Image 1: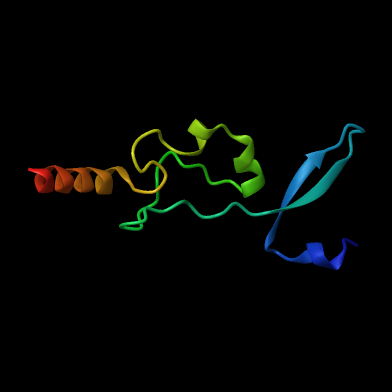
Image 2: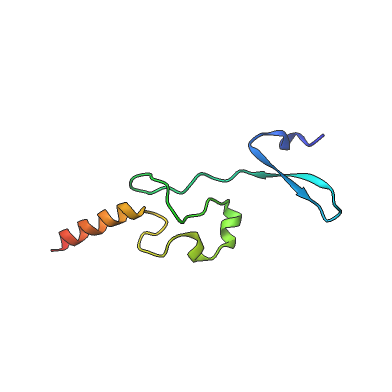
Length: 90
């Protein structure tokens, strides 16, 4: 039987074929929820849902969009923010 710590359903079961041809079960933590906009809470596009150790392996440009407030604000909130700043600046 598998060890008690791995019996929890909070871990996902991944069926893996080993080099020897055996099918075994690996246990790993589940994917996190989507990154959310700091202003409205809408899920952010172009931000991957990965665990921190996998996220670290990605390049900087793959982790978030390359625009002001990329990975923090959604496109709609960013557009509103820029409009407000342009109006306030005049």
